[in-house]
Length: 212
Image 1 (cartoon, one colour):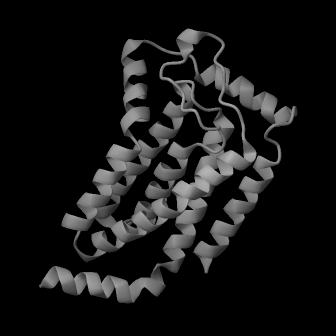
Image 2 (cartoon, one colour; image 1 turned 60 degrees about the vertical axis):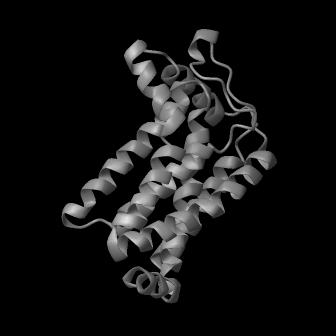
């Protein structure tokens, strides 16, 4: 039940945040100010790190993590991989629908040199990268949070944070975009984790297949 409640609360916060988007108010002014502070390239090495994170930190890292969990993670790894796939399948169309509905334009950096990577053509809010990586990090921390098993969860959580930060750094998103994406991503993944107890027949079937 706690996961369902957490998901509902996160969705409510997202809805409140979304209501401010597109209006000239103190929150969006603060958002613009924070964007110009973060979208401020700090040198070639950091720029390349952020570009790499924003290019490969979503699909490449999380597809690989899900596959490795399923193949080498044992029973618990397979179950976590199923939850990751469920969350991603929900979030991809949901994120597209939310972007189209809210229709926030992509940010325009103060200087063309600050746009380190070409922005996507879709609307800006919420960030699709933040949706996926935050969902992945939440599920990992929810399923693997004891003893040594928490180490890969923490590594992936740090990776998720850096990917989220990189989206603002390279000039593709406002801070509120990635905050909104994180709210939805963790909200959906929280509900998926809560729902996982109803998936025991599927998990048992997967376990029996692996034993054959």
